[in-house]
Amino acid sequence: MPHSMDKLAIPARPGLTEALGRLAIAHTHLELILRYVVKTLSELSVNNALDATSGDSTSEVRRRIKKLFKEKKPVPSEEAQLDSLLGAARRLSEKRNAFLHSAWSQTEAGEIILKQEDHQWGGSSITSGSRSSHY
Image (cartoon, rainbow, N blue to C red; front, side, top):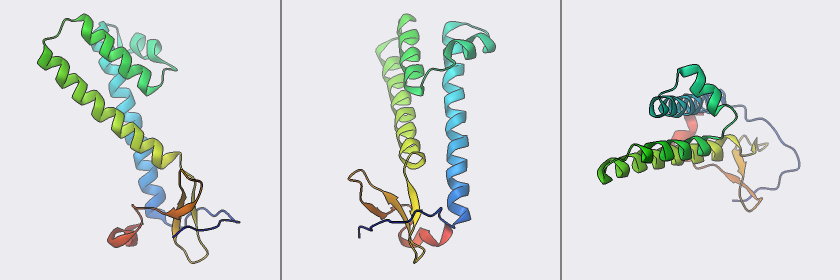
């Protein structure tokens, strides 16, 4: 059910804020791993690879990996496997962005709500149902 928000509130659910923090940290690990893949494919030192990708978005790093990998002349099955891995990394980044870049709030009744793409406020699928007591 859509909600009208005239007052924003930080959700008073420690489990939710902890989960969002863990998500942010885990995604930072994914970003670092992708930068290490650039290091391996380009045969750079860790510091040089991190400097070379500094300021690059995760999507730019994925594109760089794809380009560097193609230069290695992989067989089609290897290229398909890399595409699968990079696709999974892209989907994880999209989920992270959806959760961390959403406006979260809490109704006076204590229901956790998110601003949806249509600019309406509604319940979050991760906080509804049987799991809601965990957040």
